[in-house]
Length: 75
Image (tube, rainbow, N blue to C red):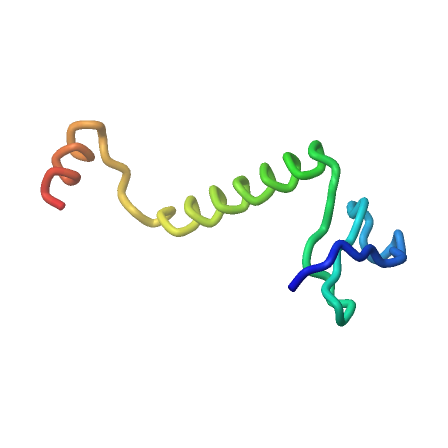
């Protein structure tokens, strides 16, 4: 069960957190951050995913649109 208990934050430990929500034992369960910071984090995660996807296929032979569509039909 999570209670809306906020802890005293150390700015250097949680630089983007505006509020920490903890359980009864004091374990952090939720972090409240500014929406703009959230959007920046989301963009960074998406960028990292794109980089990983690009690295995964960098040794594959590129296909033109017709080849790609034909390959998709075979699957």
